[in-house]
Length: 90
Length: 143
Image (cartoon, rainbow over all chains, first blue to last red; front, side, top):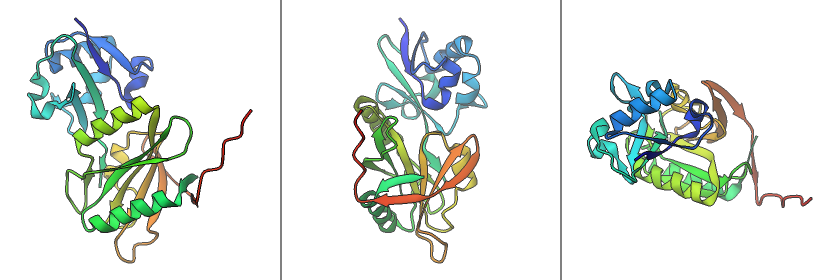
């Protein structure tokens, strides 16, 4: 079963302007790998040295994956994943 | 140019003064494409720092979802500088992710220039813009 992934404005040029895409994956890491197969370049924007980029927030349903199991967070049928660039600065 | 209700400007400044010397932050939503910031959503600065801010990720998710449901977008993204002038820092520029937004900086540092400035930040390029405070937005022309 595919997982619905909400794509932020900044990454939509990589997803042919789609706000939402459907991807399969058993964990967030696998989901990102498969997203990158379909939409090359997306992984590079999300990961930094093999881990989630510090200033990219990923949520599974309502949960920030930092408080679950980061990239190892398990996905199940019907989950919604939301990607949001952190709003931050100095 | 940023055209904005003076009550919203006052509210951003009040939040900045109240939070000083910790940086404060938030977003003002407006109907998509309208260029009219209308709904202010103050955010908790999880960094709780005098030199850095980051929206609380949980509050950010809630706010972004609400905007989607209401057909809104972030018109203004604001934060305060409590130790330096109101010009975007290197991190502000590097992390700017809403090219359509007005990036407003409230400055609460002493002798550091204007208390409110507004910028566009697109692809790492910063452009300052004028701010026009209005008592109400002009009624849209019909037809």
